[in-house]
Image 1: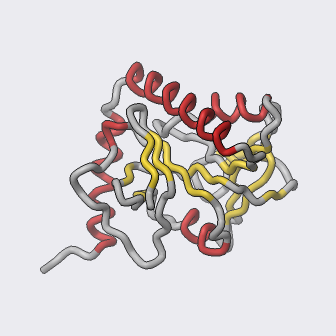
Image 2: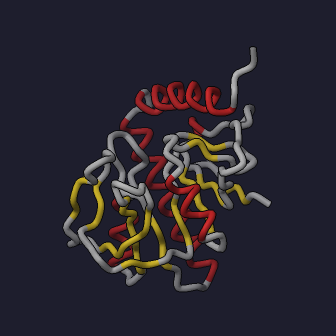
Length: 193
């Protein structure tokens, strides 16, 4: 009997969560600083005033907060997701360093207490890992995939620790999965064609 893509992804999530928990704090902080710097250079190279959709990190996720603060203080419009508990639909709302954050009632992340909705031109998608073809392994809720289907002109970015990048294995992909356009690790920038 063969595993379905869904079963394979579930197993891979368990492995990747364990591997991420085992990364040292020093390694993560160094990698995050390098990736933040590379992303800032990428934004400068585009010569475009982007509106950027981030995620607010929980537990041991890649820390986006220093980058959020830097960009917001430079005048970039930064957005964070809010999820409607009943419909599980996600939209993005404005954020600034002094924004009040509240806990989502059905999920384990913080959301901005804001009613100023925005549509990003770039999304930094949360992930456990991604592969060299742009397949992303998220947390299994499909929130970002659903959002990106109806906003298909957004540039999709992944921040992935090099040690967690799936270089030799392709992540199982299903029809609804949205591929990443650009992957940043501390060692490389990968443009998916």
